[in-house]
Length: 565
Image (cartoon, rainbow, N blue to C red):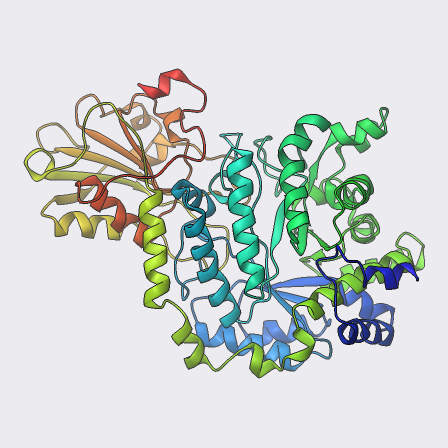
């Protein structure tokens, strides 16, 4: 039995196939020339839902297309259909489907992973994952780059933050298992990311090669246990990130020097020796986005492109110049820096994932239904009910040492809102505002006005000041903090603090660690994301119509006793 045939027959392989599907993989692979095999390894991103963009992508015959939908459902479906109908080998359609700020405008808005973990209810996690899976299938998706299984322990991390299930390995693992199982039961391939584990280093691999500093024993007890269990459960794919794990590398090569800090995406030791040999993973390894600074700052592009595949990744994610990168991959094959054997292994896994999902047996019209049918499958009453429950149950009252809550009209009628809605890196993310918060307060009789930096609130004209900040974790931000210069309208005004003069409520609709920047604020709520359902459910709890039930998945006090008071 050849190594290539064995790849298709393993009993522990999450991509294991029936004989007829194995035959399709082998026939398809053998029918492709080297250039076409290389193209199968590329998943390219789409952001415009335009005919011109789709034509440009299809010209290089990629193995998959990653869709960042705009707000136009019909355009998104039309371009997906064109991609399916125009491809000789069925393309796989992927998406970053994480919830929160990465919710698409025409789907049911669901909380991000941190907000979901705060509910601490595995049945609810499964219900939310089922909503995501059903709607993703309706939109034509086959592969979700979720869940995030990082440990949110570096409170200054702007990239892990609200995207993970928290800081505790047990909670992360239990929710990730439920999430993966539910996605894959509905026909969506799940992705455990970011290998070998993020959230200890507070830097962002979109900007630099970040480092997981754990030694082998501590890594095995945390990240290792998470990945090993998900592998045993049958997770189909794992995303290899631009994150180094020097403790493991030096356990094998004590004098590794700079190579101890090689990103996993181009590390044979991390992808093959650790992930495949020691943890036993037989599914597909996808690189994290190859345009990120964690890779581009480590290695020259001509060297990096073939190195991603040669060192264990099976799929090359994203490219600013696909034709050029495919040419660099081909050059790597011809020069022996990417072996034919490794190329064929990667192609076989990519085709096996497609076959495992049944893409070769389904017509384009079966994969993407007519727009009216799809629209009827989105934002159903049942799905909205699940999302609303999750949004409400995750809301977490971190502290209220001032006994400010519940709010009432007798004490708090005149409300000033000092808002920073934040922003999202992700194309197609829903617009951000605190209009639902204002509407809900006004509906209950509160008089609400916006903060005016030129006429700041005083005790005489204001009964309650609400800081509403909404920055969720997002790529390339570098750091998330409570920016008083931005909030108060200038660096000198940043020094003004109102909380000793005016009853003050700080609400984070994103990063859960803002108390670090405002330790003397006595009433603080983590709402985790700024979706309209979160804002509406929050007001119910602020006025005492419903209880706060969220259990923080992280330490919102950042290990600092000062913040508790």
